[in-house]
Length: 80
Image: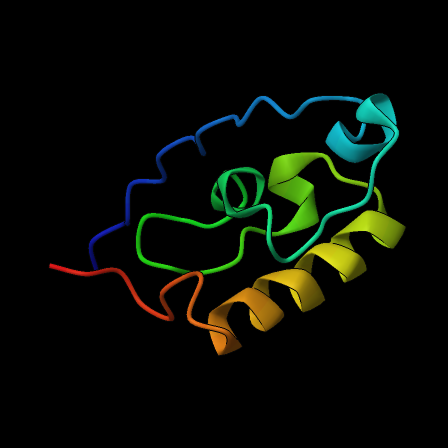
């Protein structure tokens, strides 16, 4: 049997402080330029492990992204 080669995982640099705590504001659905930073190129919401956002703001961020999608301010999936 062949042994599989294990490649080292890529290390992701994560900011140590929350983006919204530093700016002293909350994520809001109409602020789409801020929300786009936390959505991947395929349209998925990026986890708090990768973005460095605290748990409180991550919960508010997901609801505001979903609210913006429902009001057609942001796309559900990435366009081609």
